[in-house]
Length: 620
Image (cartoon, rainbow, N blue to C red):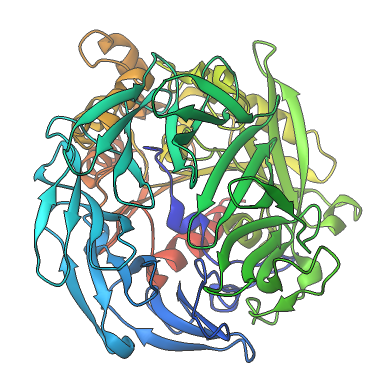
């Protein structure tokens, strides 16, 4: 939940090949967000940055022509499109300057502009749900107390607001039943411990339902016909699965769970359909069911494809979904939910409008190895197929992912494709602490940041260097967010291991990082568990902070920092790069204006993506 990710960069459009493709061509492989079909079924709204745009805007996609036409420009990046049950009101979030203090705006009638309906300076807001008549919004916000997110009921027409959850209970997520009688509130005490509270929306009485140390319970949905709540949990398990719990008893009944896989369930009351997502070893599957898992719906989708962003055409049996693979950015397709697996798919987008030959896109393959302590680690190598056969040895980039509660996969990865395109093999190790390998594996880096997981990265690099198409003398390292921290840790702990390094929105000093993280309990508890206490663990944090080992930087280093980042703040990286310069160690440092932790603007993406290639080429 509080993963330090570089989402904007990871979601950027990309391409791949064996030569050199500039950013101006690269960005013509489009990366729209989820489609929200209009009731006519012949078009959808979506958020996308087209090559001519400086930042993501709201567009209308015509399904037949596959063309985008502008709907609204907010003057800055638009995030999180949302629609109420009636389909009459459309909302979206705006994040001015990247500081994550989202405001809620409503599209005016006929999509003629937008009006802010909810927002508070220096505070966050997000939409949970709406009443079926569209008159009431349910919102999470911390505007009364920066450290506590509460559930509010809000009437856009009148501006009336009512706090529903208790003032001392910080809520990270919430689901409502279909009748607005109750809500299930999920509160996090860290990524590995969450609790569920039942809230009576009339009396505002809050009753604890599920809570256990080091156990995840996350409310998924209320069953549409029975008095039970469905949750995602790892209670007594190493993997998360789906379970139901009676509203009168806290006893879990496992409904969907698999050994060796993480499983999540969801239900959409608007369509009366449910979905089941399974993930393991960098792969993901999606299944759809009628009702609340009553009968599986056969889908006309490729078996090994990554299927995402499933949405329904309201009032019909039609659906749209994105179908992609590692070597294919994919497209959105439309199909009928009840015509079976053999029906043809109707393509409604053309996302690759570049001149890049799709045959040049990189492919992914597993690379498994044993780390320094014998632990089995899984990673993924990304490279065009031809490179494995032509006998040439190429430079490579090791990418420690962000998070750390995250994992790289066999899905389309834009940044990797860009590096493949420009001549670099990419290797992404899913080191200890990564998601998707079980709770025990995920918690191995608790109070060990910069320890075992850095050795996993280095041992993975050495395994990568054995591949016949990799030049072992020209292996670089790059990472963003927690991956940026891992990059700086790797080059200070192993000064001679990599050719050069690039870090984006990184952290370098665990003491200042712990002071700068948001004050709500989810963030505070998570990083207290994962990083440690700055007083009790002073020696450990100093030993694991690259800032205190800046003199060990022996390789060329380039650092990008977002001006308004609230997760990895500019002041910390100013201090780190300043210390390097005091020591006489060269560093290239670039601050990106009007950006937060997730890069959204064209200029920033170009600087970072093309800049990394240029920097590493300079140091080949």
